[in-house]
Length: 247
Ligand SMILES: [Zn+2]
Image 1 (tube, rainbow, N blue to C red):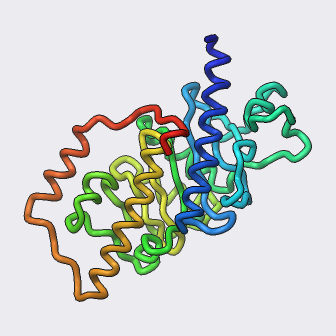
Image 2 (image 1 turned 90 degrees about the vertical axis):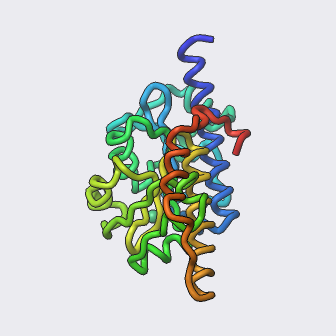
């Protein structure tokens, strides 16, 4: 398989994986309507990102946009346009624009060479923590240190503007999940699947902690357990190239 053919296959597979992940997040109530944006860094360092304003319940593989590592549009040959939407119909008559949060994705990939997938959504309970100015405790549920990883509580930056990437910048290096004040949640991973599972787990953990607080407050894990679990996460091998079928 030539390099070009391999890249085309990767684009088709990852565009399908992005659309499938969006539909899964919508079905799970982690975003509504056209909210949220997801991206993947391809093997040639270009980025596939969901288009702006697309209904995530019905998004398909043709509604993703390929950009360069710096966010500049990538102009596809017509044949690649056909490959991107998985049909014989060129996309030219209805051009799609990258998500308004492209700047956040570009800044994150630049800061984190290990990150290959980013999921941004508005999960109601985890976002509720961010709106309340609360982080998620790391020493209550094993899934938080093992799957979610370090969670940052990030100050408000206006969505769709460079202010959002600017407030995130100091937190990129040491965290995997970002609770965005008065906004939503961003999760990163070594693959799209990794980031998606992280997003689902942080919302699940937030639901459980919220219920525990309604019932009188959470009990902590034994002393030292969260740190031991976190080192387990760092040492284990994570999948590097998930297929769309694994979602
Ligand atoms: Zn958002």
